[in-house]
Image (cartoon, rainbow, N blue to C red; front, side, top):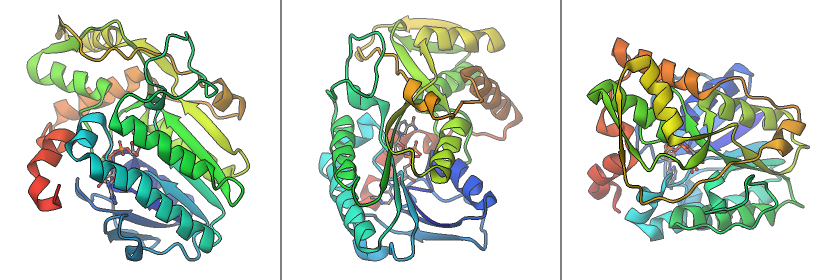
Length: 315
Ligand SMILES: NC(=O)c1ccc[n+]([C@@H]2O[C@H](COP(=O)([O-])OP(=O)(O)OC[C@H]3O[C@@H](n4cnc5c(N)ncnc54)[C@H](O)[C@@H]3O)[C@@H](O)[C@H]2O)c1
């Protein structure tokens, strides 16, 4: 199949693209490459360094499936330039959808976010609950979902609301909960936990990328799906890290009250099942840091990195 992946040079994309190529697909990636491009060249891989907002920079002709990952991918980065965030997540998504319709694309997989629900009191957050997004990032994800769903009668639409991802990628992010705490434990032998009792869902990067592959192979499983399998407190994560590193845990006040359990029963009923645990991610990251294979640099932190390249990328 011919697959177009937007944002394919990101944290998830770097794990996903080799899996798509291994399955024999022809893959085109469009990405601004804000965080570089470490994808290994392959005869079936074409990479386009361009901004998705420039709809002339890429084509959807002969594309069977789109996997739409490109976005300004967390709350603080989205707040750096809210106009850019809205343009990328919503306006560019709409242009992409229009181009997909014209080119008769068959399948559209959208990487939304579990954070679209906002603060919930329900013990289990299912796909049927109202969305009350609380940040610009969450709001743009919600609006983009609605845009994508409005094309559900045109092509197969599969919307994934992933939990926070953890684990290793060639384009590493150390600004997501499990990865961040593991890096702190390695570097400082102490982890700073904000609050700690907030329960958050997690998903391993191998599982979320296997899930995109699963949807590529099962285009008839349409609709919106939560994807988070371990709902655990931040303190629990820190305690797991502490067991393998002897790092201490320092608790400070939190300014982020979100606490929720993502219910992924709908996804599990499709036959998809995760293979990895948060503990796997912790062990893999700790080993990579110890071996020197993974370096803790500004590049691994979206906000720090985007601040440092702001002038270059014109935001
Ligand atoms: N990592 C997580 O924990 C997580 C959780 C839920 C949802 N998501 C979503 O999954 C997607 C991928 O996340 P990630 O962790 O790989 O993020 P990432 O920041 O590593 O990757 C995003 C990629 O999109 C590219 N990009 C941004 N704006 C672009 C534009 N205008 N045109 C072309 N490329 C552009 C960036 O250069 C980057 O390579 C994002 O949409 C994110 O919101 C991520």
